[in-house]
Image 1 (cartoon, rainbow, N blue to C red):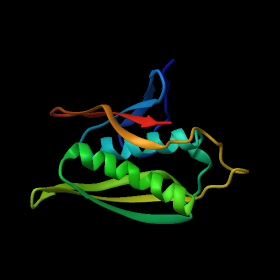
Image 2 (cartoon, one colour; image 1 turned 60 degrees about the vertical axis):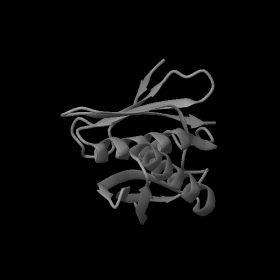
Image 3 (tube, rainbow, N blue to C red; image 1 turned 90 degrees about the horizontal axis):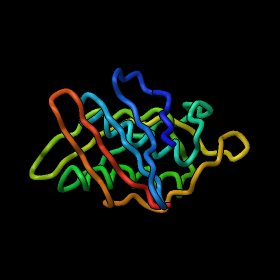
Length: 155
């Protein structure tokens, strides 16, 4: 069974869906550029943690800045940052906008804005606990008009 999400960003031609996986959660995200695909991967993570993203209000705005040696590590570090924020600060987001991904001094730098609120088990749906973001089966495919990311969340 493949579940296709509603698009929560105003990004035309961007989204994510869950792909069958034997033991973990696999997400395919896409967008017209790398920033959109990364944004959608993060929304896929949030929807794994709490399936109904529409219940999340915009009470908190968070800047996310990540730097890594390549695009694969950048994706892992970016999504791991959301796990950390959820685990430590109990924040969940339903609007994630990667503003830029740039190569500077042999490292990729990502800047994003995320909007959400404190997770409340009485308000938000409880989804699946994600332990880690993995390199297993990870793929970033960049074509002229579409970028696709496949990534697995260890549950």
